[in-house]
Length: 119
Image 1 (tube, rainbow, N blue to C red):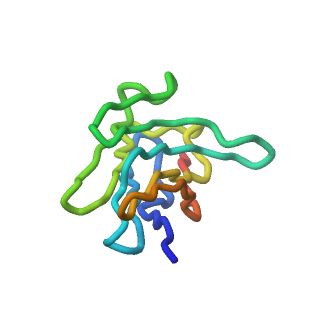
Image 2: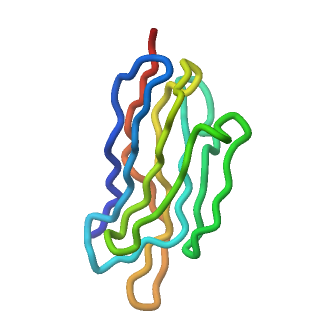
């Protein structure tokens, strides 16, 4: 059984920074395409940023210029660097990733990590 493990959330002041991480719980699963979503109570999960296995990135307009998604293939980990944080960035951040083992690839969700931006 493999899980997608997220970390790095927390409480930060307006203008501060956080870095989220997303990685599989087993090293024999490789991390391919990864997408980060944010969810607030009563709303659907919204797209934040994505990265392909080749490193191509895409961002929601609301985070362009402030957030950076990247990957370290040696560590089998994807990061979401969040700078200049605003109260509207508050929410639970979920990582969705395609994990591959041998010739089988499936999609997984992480457990979510809370990000709270306050004054």
